[in-house]
Image (cartoon, rainbow, N blue to C red; front, side, top):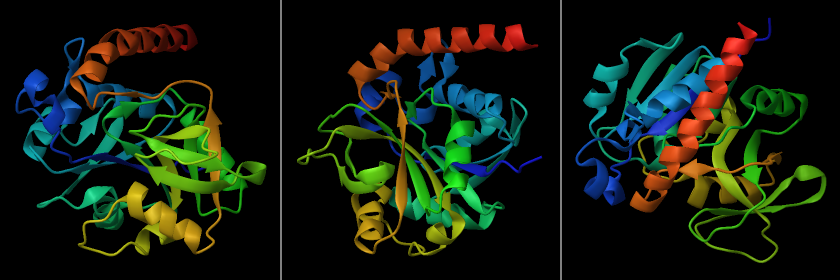
Length: 247
């Protein structure tokens, strides 16, 4: 059996824009139909065959740990705790000691994309790239603008700004070689999207894209959070029915 990679879910942010809707709760605990958003992500990972998840937590980390514990939905959960904000790259680097596989899947803890994560990992492992990122055929000024070159190679990654020739946005889902993670400065606040991806590209690192024909649903603003309620409830029900049909 081919080993599935460990997964790191980046969920340490303050979620300031959602305070008026969810109060002091950490963003991954914002409820969708009465259950934490994080539950949807963990169930998705289990459906796709993953078994070990590292939750990179920060603000109100004790709330997340108390709710999910060390096991949930058939997954082993490990916690990497930021004592001060490290950004997405710094948080991932801090989690390195918990990563036991040669490659790692990285997810943002405030967005859901119903992509085939197993196919993503297979595609990455069949390539010679150091990373593969999920992209969606859309553009939005508050997301990562992506320019894709020949043969699906990542050419430009511009966070929260539109750039010429951009036809895709980043879904915030990556598969990375563990050695790439090891090269991130330890203990420093640094962003995967704003700093590291552009730096890796400038150094000539081979990063591939994985196009998903769907949408990325995030709960980062009150408006998107409200919109996500109906969409994600439908997504979950479809997945429940699919699971029952296969059992």
